[in-house]
Length: 216
Image (cartoon, rainbow, N blue to C red):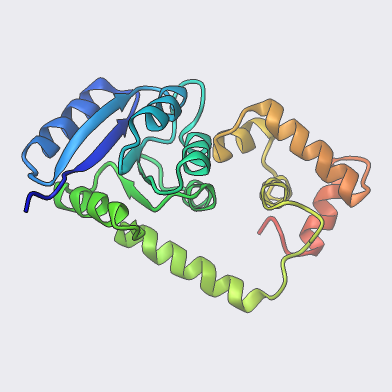
């Protein structure tokens, strides 16, 4: 019986990196490239039209970033496994991809066998992370289990993330870069946080946040 190959949509704004993945998968019998996209918007449109089994998603791209593209793809087609394949290993990027519905997170330095294993795992509904990232996740959730309820229950997860970065002394521009969102989005979140915490300015918000253990 012939087994249908795993169809992969490759999303990256660097043509040479896409070429490298095309060469890699050409040598793998059970995987084929279904399409390629260079922006997040293209990724969402092609995922909807092509319905691949797996999307390999870069995070930092023009227009729509990889996290938001992942969120939209998974919302429309939950069966598609999205795996981040990126240069960046910041904690926030990893957790944002998980919250967006991603099934894995690899760095572009991963060896070819690891990338192929990740594609096969995502196609089977599994989640896969590189060893270093897996250790980060274990540490994060272990710390969460010890820390008790989250502070500021009236904030959304994203607002709490923004507040944590505000409390750490980050500017709006730095927060936008860290969370891979626009400065306008950060300003909106900060405004909502001030309103929910009933504080007048950034200084008061920082005091409240640090009292609750954020910003460390």
